[in-house]
Image (cartoon, rainbow, N blue to C red; front, side, top):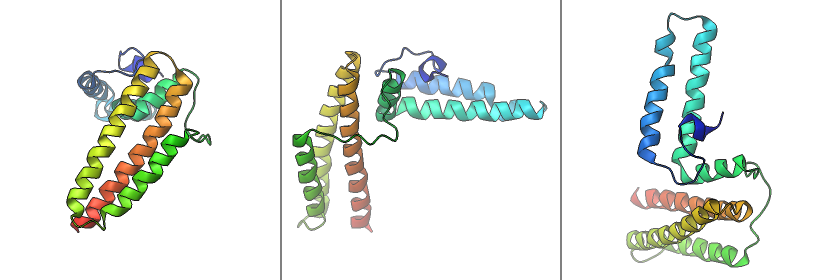
Length: 171
């Protein structure tokens, strides 16, 4: 099953999230297990499976990184479980510097302000990478877009670590 086809969308990175949500609700209504309460065991099981597939499709299409990965997969570039590393040394150096900055947030004289500054910097870098990846996907530069997705995964990990640090600081 092609997730884009399931949601009646063209296979492209840019999607209408509100249309996806609306279509998701419609699809879930049609396969909801309650509709199959009087059906055979097999039909009930198929209903549950279809609902799970619709959930997977929805989660994939609404998340930009997962959507990009899925689009790449449809075009023959598989990123899941891969062992390929990023070879862009300037990006890797930037990541090292960002990690050092993140470690310094906790020990700053005003950790809350430092965390907000770091979040702003991260958001700007992520936005630029996202725009770059979007253009690469639109131009069918699959391998280059795959590298951008890998980089975005690094950025997402940093964002998650920042949230954990902020939780720790607020505790």
